[in-house]
Image 1 (spheres, rainbow, N blue to C red):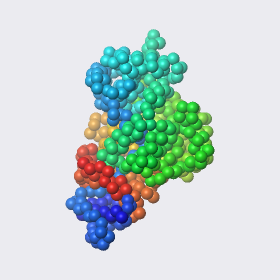
Image 2: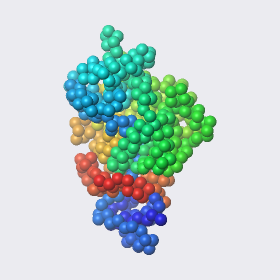
Image 3: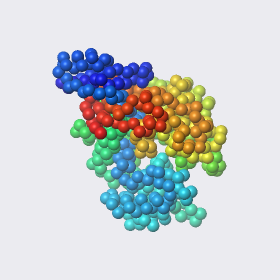
Image 4: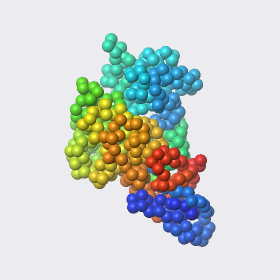
Length: 526
């Protein structure tokens, strides 16, 4: 019998309604009692439990990241970090230093953004060849919808001869090494095919430890194939999962129809246990704003010949949504551009998305007429507040008229829609305080050019904490287990150095996790 009492602190039981107590009693991984410190102490002593004096520290429910990529996060944490690099010459220098130490067959990096480069251009294979020519190199853009490879990687992958869209070429027809969407996916899948189940286990363990140090206790894995599933099942069977995982599988993996397999064996949304659970499938309606592959209803302001394009054709998307819905699986559809959102809303109009809480990932660009349709259909929305700061260039991309439609967090929440927070890690940092800071400030202190245009979409700290706990729990259909510290819930919580509701906006990103608990057991300590 495991009994533990936490007393003499500020314990946020929930953020909506706001409930604060001073005592928390845990019994075998669940909340047995939450209330006064005096009553908690009395109960703990009568049951012979361990007593922890918080000495005024703050407890909040564990963060729930509704959309990230565990294996890719592990890979990013294990490879070259290119976030914030300001020039191609700096990128080359970082690559040179990393390549001399890398133990991988492929040299991998992630996080560059050509919008930050002083050269004002995309990196090319020739840039990479100057540094590494004898090993394949793949460096993915911050959005994971574009990347650049060196000549060696082009030759090994044979992507230039594949006929797939997304291989950018120069005026002579030569591939530049820049790959978008399908082409990048092809090369990444080839790379991943060389990784073993054991490799994936190690990558997931790396990601898991990182997330626990950030106070993230549950994640929604927004897309994975069979190898990642097998790695997670291997960890689950050995009791190595210390974070709760909710899975959205890709509908296909190579030649394997995953949706067909799930149907044949009768897997429905919620199959699994408290640590590992299959929720449904992940689909893509379009790409991203950074590489201009998000599908817009009108052309890009800074590229009038381009409106982006669908990844799944509308009819195919509609059929897959209906098929998954009929099986009883939750659907999560990536839609960043407003034209892509049109297609998803059309697909959802033939079913009842509210029943299984079918999801829309990102919903970055939402017109007023689409807002009305969202209120009618009531899908769940997984949003990424830090995109506001990372996409500082967005106004030049979509122009004056559309900038007011971008990242409409306040509007979505006040419209009564179910909204949960996420980071899309490794696209953004997995640090929840960076996410909350972005939601609350919208770049007010970061010189974001369109701050004034969208300042009305700022959220309060309380709204942000709710979205990161209870909101995300509801998106993952897990609100009866996690998201609050009410009696009977799983004891997933974090101890903080400061009360998040008592600090200034600027101080939010400086908050630190002292300890993280999952199932009432400490899984991280500073």
